[in-house]
Image (cartoon, rainbow, N blue to C red; front, side):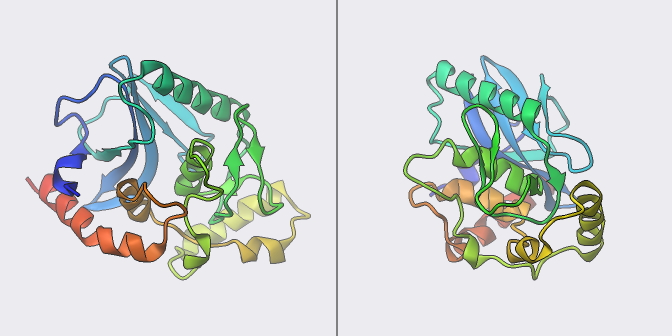
Length: 227
């Protein structure tokens, strides 16, 4: 595995005209936000859930190199139609999503019509990471879940954001089953999401596999963003 060669800082290298990638924004040297970066016929598209506003696709996305990404080999880079179909899927999701920011990851997905299908019985709740996972899960073959979710818990929650998000959920879903909510409250971090791009051979991905890749990924990020 050549992490240094495969982990790419935005616009630092000449790349295929079409691809789908796992991407994160680097903020103060750390992975702070998760997204999917798509290039289709040489045009860049950033697909993500900002958190405080609805999910969006930014066409012609271009910034000053603060995103780093790994091409996701499950989507064939040589087939512009395959990449284009995935892009259209993302557009359908953006049109129909009613996601509210919350530390919920429950293995749900967006179906091929772009509709949210809850696995737990909860409404569409999630972070930038879980939003991307819900989209990618429907593109996998023979996999019901992207991550082995029992490996994660709520020990890494940011307390202030957790309180804010729960307040938003209460306003939108006053009759929510909070016992069910707490059963699926967990945090998968953007850096863990990025590391998953190197572990595509065996789903669902175990946290121990992420831990094994993470030091090398962090070292590459450090080198690329300190130069």
